[in-house]
Amino acid sequence: MWRGDVSDQEYGRQLAADWLGVPERSIDAVDFRELQTDEEYLDALKAEIAADLEPFNADSVSDVLTKYLGSSIRVTDTEGA
Image (tube, rainbow, N blue to C red):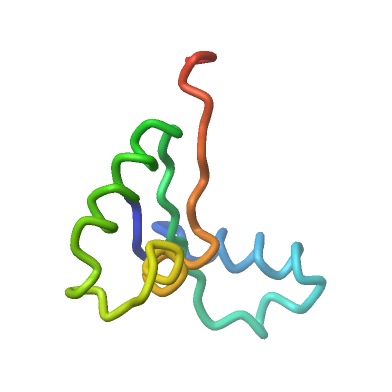
């Protein structure tokens, strides 16, 4: 899992401004969060979460993943690596 500030803030702001079509000066900061995993690891993660939902204060595995990771899960193909 990777979470944190973009190491080159100026470049990150330039990219964000280009992507959003806004002036760079309107971008205060950029950060990035993502979990890159393969299907096997994601399945194992889901199983561990399902085994004990109480600490997450959630009703389902899906709720936990949405609450803590949002849309920042990218499943990669390990066979091509």
